[in-house]
Structures are given as structure tokens and as C-alpha cells.
Amino acid sequence: MITKEELDFFKDWFTKYVNSFNSGDEDLQQNIDIKKVHTDNVCKAIIDIGESINLKQNDLYLAETIALFHDIGRFEQYARYRTFVDSKSENHAILGINVLREKEVLKNLKNSTADFILRCILYHNKLELPKNETEKCLLFTKLIRDADKSDIFRVVTEYYSRSNPEKNPAIELNLPDSPEISEKVLNDLMSEKIAKIENLKTLNDFKLLQIGWVFDINFIRTLQIVANKKYLDIIFDYLPHNDEVKKLHNRVIDFINVSVLEVEQ
Image (cartoon, rainbow, N blue to C red; front, side, top):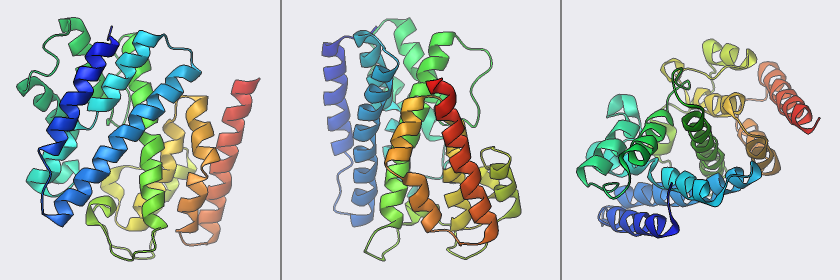
């Protein structure tokens, strides 16, 4: 259980911690700011999704705490390695857990509550959900994974639609912006699977991976957010307009429509 006073304390700590990374280095500051805004939006999204499934107030505070800290490792990651690619640096979830432990941020919580928060952070960026976990931990892990994806869609679509042609390698994962699409990535999505990051060879592959996140969304409210904001349509607009991509677009739209219909019935 988390109280409003505890959540307010965490928010104050978070602001001070993130501000410690403020820099005259334009590249560093740009990407620190991106993650700061992202965290704020994920906190709002997890409340929105949590309310849609009628979470109680204290559980909403707990969910928001998890959202607040889910990417706390990103700030040190970028400051130290100048990348958000875990495979080229460190797993940002584990890095974040280490930050929270070293700074003793959760020391005033019950051990069980602190451990619960850390487990949800640990699972938020894994390819698959853990098999042996409590129902409540899986629920909150699904909440943070959905809230996280909903705002990453915003980040990348705003980036692809930008008027400024200057590139941000941290967002593009340093992938080449060439017209090719990898067959393995496309086949995974056509099978309604998430593409594996190790199969990404181009920026187009990364865009397809982002589209594939729709197959790992857990709550109808998240699908509604993604559909209402037209995030997937925007990403598709920045992909080659060939028959394979058009076929995938239809598959994704059908998946969303069927998922929404099943819930409404």
C-alpha cells in the first residue's frame, strides 16, 4: 500500500534526482528531458488505465509509484553510456533497481511493498511476462508495460513527424535509415508476435517492432488510446508503401478491432 504522502515524497525525490543530470551538454540534456517527460506521461497513463479497471485509490498510488520509477535507470544509463540501447550498455531496469537501492529511496516502505515495486520495474522491459509470479504482481506489471508503450508510441510518432530534420541516434538506436525491411521482423508481426530486437537491421525494422507492441497490450483502454491517437497509422505512413506492409497494416487493424469487439461483448 502506498499513501499520497509517500507518493509526494517519491515525486519530490525524483525531481531532485533527475535535475542532478542537468547539463550544458545539449545532447545529454535533450535526452534527459525526453525521459523526464516520458515518465510524467507514463504516470498519467497508468492512472488512466488503472481507473478503467476500477483500481482502488491506494492501488493507483502504487501504480503511479511504479510508473515514476520504471525508467529511473535511463538517466544514469544515458549519462554514462550515451545510449538507451541496453545491449550496448546495461539493462536499464536493473540499473534503475540498483539506483533505488543505493539511494535507499524505498527504505520507509514495508519490505514487501518495496520488493513488489522493484519486481514490477524488473519485469517492465522483458520480452515476456514471468511465469511464476503472484496475480497482483502480474496485474501491475501489465499496467506499467501498457502505460510505457502508450507513451513510447507518442515519443516515436512525434519524432517521425518532426519538421526538424536533425536526427537523434538515441531514439533511432543508431540503426541505418535505409529502405530495407528484414524478413524475420515482418514474419514475426504477421504471426502476431513481437519482433526480436536482435533481428533489427534498419530503422524500418525498428518501426515495425514498435507496431508489433500492439500484440502485447493487455487492457482495452490502452488499445483505445493507441487507436484514438492514430499512432500506428502514423508509423505506417513512415514505412515503405508496398504490398507486404499494406497486408501487415490490415492485419494490425483487424487485430485491434477484434480485440475491442471481444471486450465489448
